[in-house]
Image 1: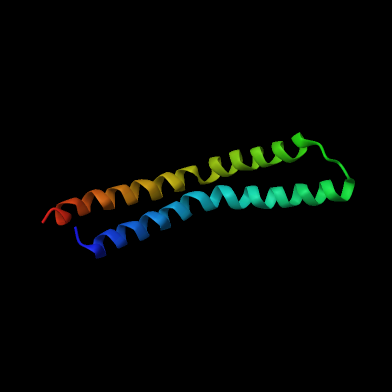
Image 2 (image 1 turned 90 degrees about the horizontal axis):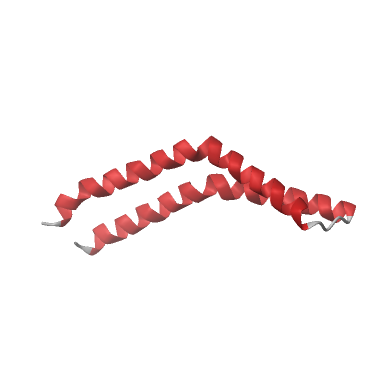
Length: 89
């Protein structure tokens, strides 16, 4: 295995990681910001008020983007699997 193949696989895995995390983390981040603004404006400091909306947002994001995320992961795995014979030479 040469260094170029290793760097290419590492770069591909990091890109897959970004594609897997972004659809879940970005909506949760936006909801956390929104809930934080509402809590600051109303002076409510209830812990469950910040947790439950983010949890629901993450669950909805997983329902919406779960199939896409799985497809990205399967495609990357199949691509790595197809590279194996070339790496053994």
